[in-house]
Image (tube, rainbow, N blue to C red):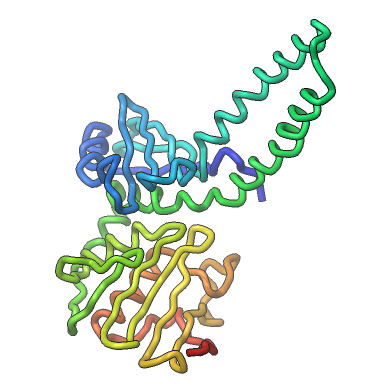
Length: 283
């Protein structure tokens, strides 16, 4: 696995022209200061920058370039956790080397000053890069947003969600806040796309009866409850399903969790790639 403190590379192809891509992103992204988590940011010329939260300045971020190609356009760049902080720290390194050189050459450097600089950059630096590498998949909600907005596969999944029929009255909570509108398949789809670190979606059919999902390592974990803490289950990948075999068997991608939630909302059987394992929780 490559070491990626500056985020991981992404490339998204779209049949739209670059100008249409920009219009589509601008029409879907949130305002900079919208309190709810979700993609927001700016587009200047061919450059695009998106981030996830109005409050977490060290949170997931995406930098990319929009360009044309024979099939339409592409957006490519890097996405990761705290990209701005990592870049700023990296830019400080040559500056601090120059400062240390000047202090030593002028004979004004004290042992204490050099020790502090050494601790910050020789010990703190590797820690900063390792944490950025470890959390780089926190940017997945931003990549999901672009795929849903720009790609053919994203629009296909959106049509599948729109075709679902919700057969019962549901209550949806997003990040602990009750969704105020009508719970439609489209609303569920949007809520799932925006699930990121620290957020979750709960779809409740009745008292102590719900399904919920949260983010882990850029993917989803899923649980459901059927009437009380003694009937609480977590979703696992079926043993006969080899898709995404390199992942843990309790992690699911967006397409899979979307299918699980739509099945629950329409009271259909769970998809065949899911099996439920009872969790032993105390009241």
